[in-house]
Amino acid sequence: MRVRGDLATTTNNPKGPAAWLTTDTPGSRFQARAVEIYLAWLGFVRNPLAVLGLVIILLLLMMAAFAPLIATDDPNAQNLADRLREPGWQGHLLGTDELGRDIWSRIVYGARTTLYIVVLVTVTAPVFGLVVGTVAGYLGGWTERILMRLTDIFLAFPRLILALAFVAALGPGVENAVLAIALTAWPPYARVARAETLTVRHSDYIAAARLQGAGPGRIILGHIMPMCVSSVIVRVTLDMAGIILTAAGLGFLGLGAQPPLAEWGAMISSGRQYLLDQWWVATVPGLAIFIVSLGFNLLGDGLRDVLDPRSAQR
Image 1: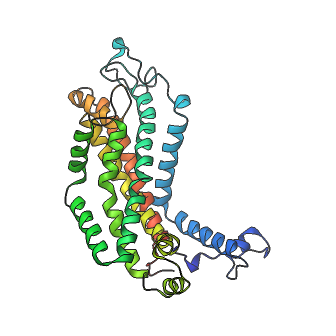
Image 2: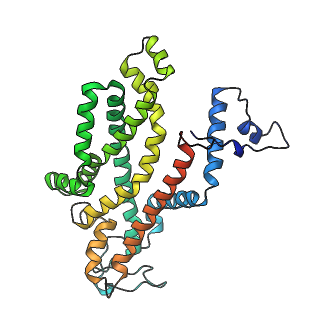
Image 3: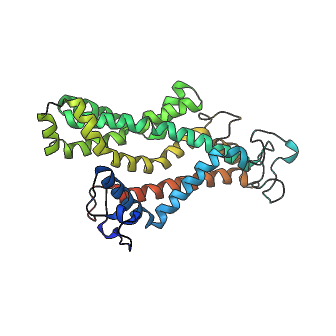
């Protein structure tokens, strides 16, 4: 983890928490880790764009968690008498769609669908890619050739096109969309993990672990994978925007979340025919996708500045 030396602060109380978190001589492993995390946090908050990204993601999480309290109407309740109503402070804040459903409420509940897809992809694709990359980088030989050529095959196809092929074979639905996105998202993580593994597999501490009798599995799980986690985390954060766009693309084509479930891509698809006259039907969910994608990109840039172990600045 990147630690900036110029972030160490002084305090008038040498026994205060700030002094404990900024000491140059930690007394335990726990304190050393706490100092490292605290200084990294100070470096993170110095980047206003990264903080803005974090705020956007926290707001998204709060919107999804408290959707029943934030939404003003039932997201699936239809009222044809109020169809295509303009946004306004009285009635519907962001207007209504072609079926008279409140767009604000559907945006709020659509955040749950977006986070559901993002979380499931995050706990599957990076883990699989990390395993493939570290095993290929450490074992080398034919194992590396086979695994990396398989990775190259997946990288040769555009992610959305490959996801469309998988969803067409599996059938439409949120779960199948998650599986399709995960199957197309793991190769970049494998490449990152392999590159990290190649830089550390001949290190002294790896040789010491091997001399102590540790097998390949123990070395990969206990020594190499932890070294690759920071780079994978940064890559995951930067890839969130692409995952959201892919999920929205599948929803736009009718292969993701199925009606009446609120999903931003499907909302854009249903509102595109009203774009010239009732612009808010498709524009509002498009802005939601844009803002959330921007938030993940800004957060990823900030984490990269903090977690990049090869940064020249310390």
